[in-house]
Length: 230
Image 1 (spheres, one colour):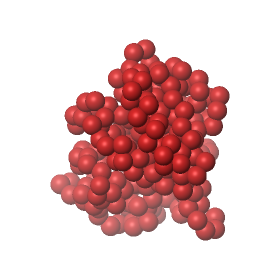
Image 2 (cartoon, rainbow, N blue to C red):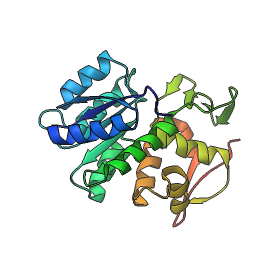
Image 3 (tube, rainbow, N blue to C red):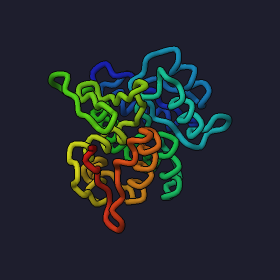
């Protein structure tokens, strides 16, 4: 699945860029690098990339600012973004996810793990096989083939995990999912994040889908469910 895929690695440390580029190249990815956020943004706007691996702590435009800029750009906002950081606190992860990152990886992670997480993000982002199936959710339409969400006023930009979360809930109306259930099915057992991550994603998802967000109910002390729309 990684043939011809074009990845941008952004880090102000040359040795980090070199190591990540080398390992991804060995896996068959086409890799380019950028030393800072502003350069990366210019490259993303000038060329076509399939994903970006971005260091959080950089001078000038840091990784969080770059992530925000990508999500605000209509042409780039669906790009999978993996944030890479030397700090690994829960708050760092929450902030990273709130600005639209698809995943959050410690710099202490092995090159193999970084590659695996990249492949997972790309797989979630890839179009689903089959016909042009759709699923209704309130006034929204989920295009299962293109993995897009269409509202009354047009497409709604969601991160890959927000889309996966919405799809899982929408496919099982009235079923209560615990936070542990959602972590397992949306993030996977190999990803180490806290249950607070689910709450952050649900909050962001509700905001993005407007009035349809009311259909996602909080089951106090348990998790979430989707109320079947009337």
